[in-house]
Image 1 (cartoon, rainbow, N blue to C red):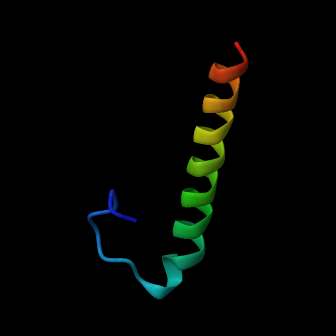
Image 2 (cartoon, rainbow, N blue to C red; image 1 turned 90 degrees about the horizontal axis):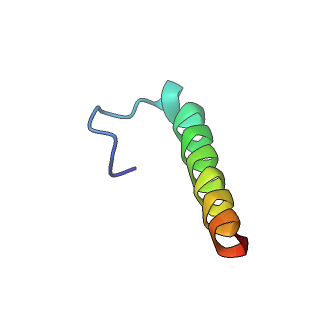
Length: 37
């Protein structure tokens, strides 16, 4: 995660993956909606 400046701890790994997955999904949905509009 390039945009995360703070050190990533093992306890935050699941949270980081979840945030990255959510962000990617949101971005793909936006691109899909923009393409079909």
